[in-house]
Length: 73
Image: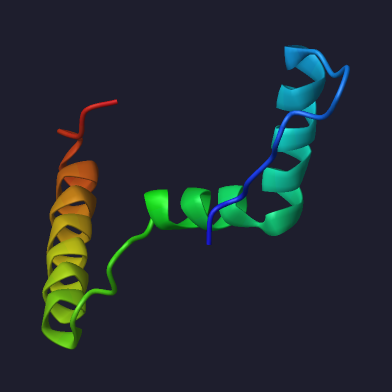
């Protein structure tokens, strides 16, 4: 599914590059490449649960230290 651009008669290299970049943008190849570059896998149910438990534990610990006046700010 590549994009092919051939040099036209009396066309300089800059014009060729300009036509090529426009074709790439219109085809959506660049958009798909950018989306797949930053793809993040979905976390499993167990991993989400563990992360939530860890956040809760850290929050409780922070609140405890805050009440004691020992928190770092």
